[in-house]
Image 1: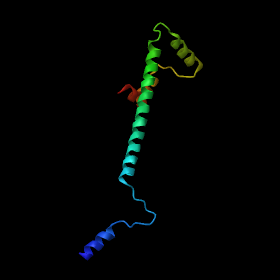
Image 2: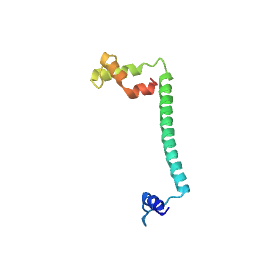
Image 3: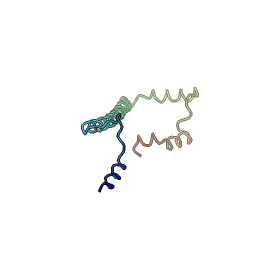
Image 4: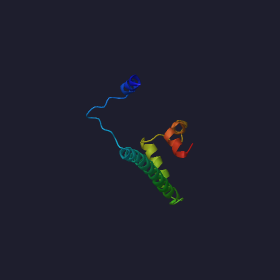
Length: 106
């Protein structure tokens, strides 16, 4: 019996004077903080996504007869700031864009 207890004691990690034993309340608080941090990050991401969707919808539905955006795009293409958005390369780049496809839910 004595040998068995010695072996069990040898298997246990040695406690040093500087070791800190956490209470169950500390463990609960750490778990709670971790959960709330993840929940906060998730809520913030959802809020930003929802805000972006609302802004985009407002922009798209604001005035269907306003074609100023087409003029702006054409001016940007002519000045060389962007390439032709309807070219095959541009369309392929969009289909390879994982972030874009994820936002579309595809």
